[in-house]
Image (tube, rainbow, N blue to C red; front, top):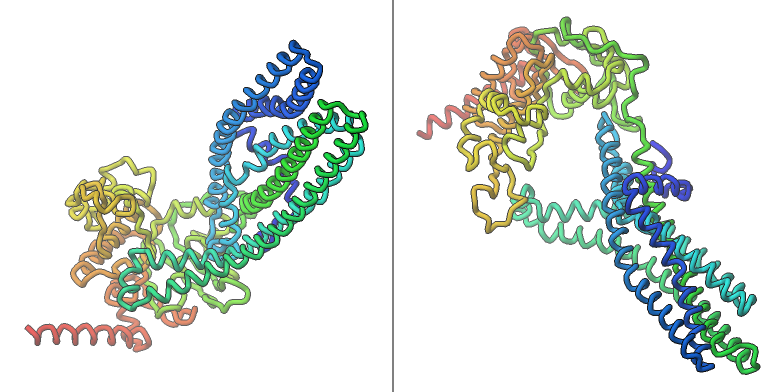
Length: 617
């Protein structure tokens, strides 16, 4: 991870100007070209107005009717242009923002989805950087993209007005320009401080969002109400909000003071200029038209300078935000690419070997796996059992190559997984995770997430649902497979068959299983607690189906319920990251170790529960 990603503001933000300008041009060449043309026109309007005003006043002073009417006509045309141009500019700017926003989001999410591993997604520092990167939208970069055009307009206006001032008073031209320097320095410093403060408050903002979501999330609603957590969570939300607002308040106070001092400086400069012009006119050095032109030129020059300062400050702010975007999108994959060109992953024919595998999530964390050596033979079912924290889920993550082993290797028919692109490996696997997803999509789309190419292949989707025992449930929904399995997109009053349905936990479990079964013909099937949350009858049915599906296929089955794994070809017991026992069910029971003890304990609990149930009938 880069230095910027580790924390703090992105360095040297101005280096991104050319990158953003090129992005904007590629995103919207037409609107950008039109906006440049309009900018050239508007940049000359202030100077034109100054000299048109001078001509009008001088013509009226000497009673030159023709000159007065010509000057008035010129001012009318300039006024018309000044009235139309802002609306044209606003449309062009909005269109540029829209197209650039789409390109930026395309870049950002292409990069994020391109990370093959999980390490960054489990890093709070990365989430802070990512949240700041998502702020770099087309609208947020407007001060830079359209700001470039604003800068051109202000420079044109400034140059033309300064020429006018130089003609009338070179000293005032220099004074007005010099007064803009401290304003530029102060505004740039304020922008950097504000973005830095926002970055520092990123973790606070995430906490606020977390506590707020717990108050409003339907999944948390039961416990929040059952345990009376509303007041506690509300206090956490308000505490995080207060911390964020205090940081913003300090910034606002400093900026208000700075801006007031800059306004005082600007007023002093313009006041001094007007006094000079009055004295010069009284001495006969300036005409009435000259005084009018001078006053307009000073005001226009200060306005152009203020506009230029604000444009530069806004561009600096946008560049700092874009720095986060550039930082995230420039990150390499979090899993190293194969050290040599891969010859492709062979069809599994011998099996998968874990050779002295050690793993921990960070150098400062304890070892999760300690020297695990294990073979998953081709065509066999290996069951992985153990208490919580034994390392079962971590082992699955390594098999999927979400991480690489810290030591040792995992080999697929002798091929080290580190020599295989992760996407190629994952195409050969079907995996049901214990923490499976419940997508806010239709039933058909939820199943098709297992293999998106099958999204429009309804027979395949229905076959997978039948295998998982959920076809009848889905078919009975208001719109069958087209039923939305969520209610977040609809208002409560929309009680129609399109308003969405919420499934039970067991039904979701079967749907997630169907998602995996859609990936038929895969070399390796991994099932992590496939029957968790199911009742006894449903659990028996699922395991009966899975036993038929696993026949002749290489599979890894993880379960806390030992009755579900007794038919496995090999049972491996993990304890504290190490293999404590291995063998068939009968061998492990004969050995009388921890597996046998745990199996007998579960069996006694089940029999006791059954006897109690029979006795109550």
